[in-house]
Picture 1 (cartoon, one colour):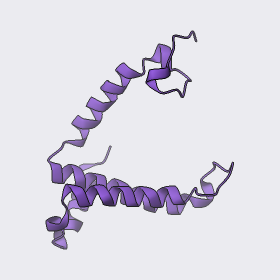
Picture 2 (cartoon, rainbow, N blue to C red; picture 1 turned 90 degrees about the vertical axis):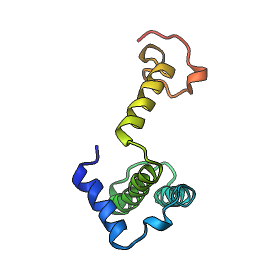
Picture 3 (spheres, rainbow, N blue to C red; picture 1 turned 180 degrees about the vertical axis):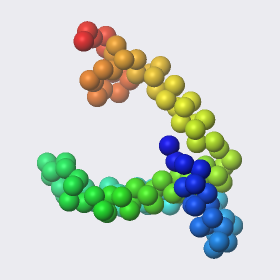
Picture 4 (cartoon, one colour; picture 1 turned 60 degrees about the horizontal axis):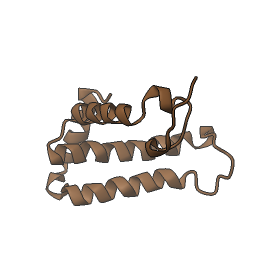
Length: 116
């Protein structure tokens, strides 16, 4: 999880530039999407090449940008990331029980009972 030190660094960076005034949920959601698209662009036209070793520096930069905007979005909305992530994992655990989802990439609506 993000350390308090890292979280504070992101907020301090924003505050030192007086950018909080621009960080409304709509614009932050757009920024998250744009940065995630830049992360996705790294893999565009990569064919069967799923190894990311050659692109690791670009991946780190775009992933950091995306996560930073997620931190700022949570702050703008007054959300506790630990709380919302834990709630989502619990919800997904109910939708994807191990006995049905283990080793299966199907959406929860398509899962069937299977034996391991």
